[in-house]
Length: 483
Image 1 (cartoon, rainbow, N blue to C red):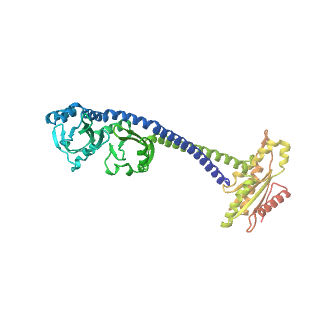
Image 2: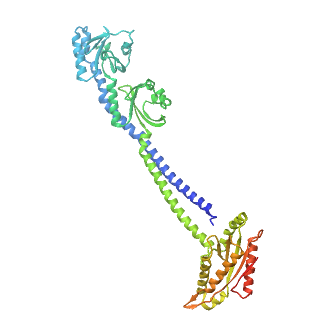
Image 3: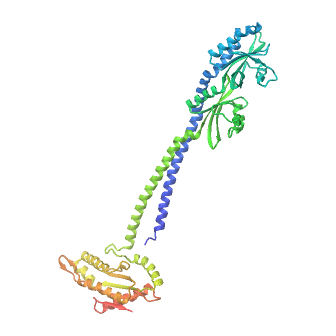
């Protein structure tokens, strides 16, 4: 009966696909537009503003030691003490100790060009020598064209703790080099400072020198991350970053997209790098996307469920309209054509008996003419009800024509078919059928035939029709069978 079932499934599948694709396209379009807007906002506004803020913090936290070193290099006391022959070591020691304490430096120092003596806040530390690797910095400072440099070295006066030194050239009043002075901050202290920036601004912050080496970052642990040419993703941008000095960059590393803003800090001669992972930035809209997709899936499921119910009801209604006689509620000829094929296929396999019982209301036109068509319709419905009550669930009962009915009986030989036909005939004759309190006498003529091997359904029906015709000829209200 459900020959249209595959079409229904295709319709529902197409509906769900179109809904799903529509929701998915809308959600993804919204996601990528939001993602692009967030990335643009981070690259063009958020990271540069963060870099400006960090630069302001650096000016307070790192630039101050440079200014202190510059002050020391131009201090007349220091110059005069050197030019007078460095006679009183206690004087320079007190001076350096005062600088260290006043400006909260981890160390303060002066190295004399004339004597090559390394003075610090606790007295004389050593003599510097060109052959000593620890003293290379001093001989590099002697040749500097700039007034100072920043370098990271172990501090001998502080148990070799890695220290950021500001090494400032000291000249006499004629501009001749007479030594190097400055202060230092431990790398760990500066790392904590940078870590404070990171926590405050929720960004990754690190510093590069002009050669592309990572000179400082809070989470720096591995040696192979000290050069950006060895960092995944950044290696391809290294030359451009160092050439341009400042700007915004995007690269991939560790399976994530990273947004980077670089700003050159001339006071430190370093590049300040402020970085944020895109995943972190768009985690919120990803959650929104997931929620949207779940909602879309739920809506699609609800729509699909509602559509299935509607289509099923519509299909059932259409099938019922197409296969059911509206007046009697019995199958019509179209339904018979659908149902008879599987029944005959089963008969071929099982060889069980199949019989046809065809019955027709006698003188039905008289009922319509005398009592009206509404009375005739009620008679047809009542006879259909009487006949259906005497059949089994496996049997097929159809309204075959205007006042003609056909029953196909499974597992029923000719004798049983005749008996059933006679029951229907007797029930109709017994009535009662009424119209406005008046009895309407009704009878039917019945023809029965049994399906023969090798016979077609049309041949079976033709024999049943011949038996019915014989019953009519013999006076009606009879049951006749043909072998």
